[in-house]
Length: 366
Image (cartoon, rainbow, N blue to C red; front, side, top):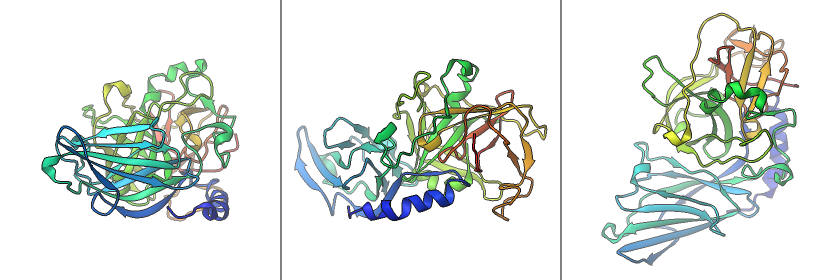
């Protein structure tokens, strides 16, 4: 990939200053548009047991991790696709025909390091067919697979954030499993919530913020990660491997800043999925809580012991005339925790632990 340092120096800080206080997605990667296929890149090898093997190594100097977006993704029966780093200690896959989507889109989670290899193993009968196009290589300049001072821009959740697994919040042990981290188009992090429906038929709907998706097609190129949390009440890194790639937009509103998508598959039982309830009553709860991924970090919880107030977004100086007036709830002060970039789309829960909204943004100071 081309050199990248100039972007970090010139644009990241400006972007953070302009947007972090208001809307709260978390930009962590720079996208390189590419067109890499088994026909025009990489090398083919004769494998064993009737297989061809295709390998392509991608290097982007200085990247903390790399992730890929595929298009025209159609893995044939019996073929396997792997993505791994140069030390082969971080491996994704095997991806197979069961990962094919109707859209042809497929996004993979970040792989640690600045060099990754894509390896396709395909039965000889398919004669080295083109099974996909790699259309985007995302260069992680933050280090979202690392924590503490290893993040080069020091973008970690503030110390006032509270790990969701602390003993005093054990009442949220079930509900927390509804919250997931979104990696949108390989470059942006938001939060979301797996939400129930009136049929209670386990349709895997994720509710988040509309401003997390620049296009209604972006859910098809989003990775939804469950259970990314510290196992204890401590800032230990979690396991980001419980993920689902791809979803379909079902409902979207810029003026209320919500987006509802349906995952490409039901989260399996070992993800411990919890389908959060919701409440569309106009009653204002006496207190609220939010569970989210600030700075793309492990799952945190925020508590407000007072009622939120009906507000226009950005009051008293509303920042966007296109948002519906008095269509939002404002948290005046968090007694415990806060929200940050990456918390966008995080669910706001009432006293019955039902969803009553999702985070748009604001200037949280506590």
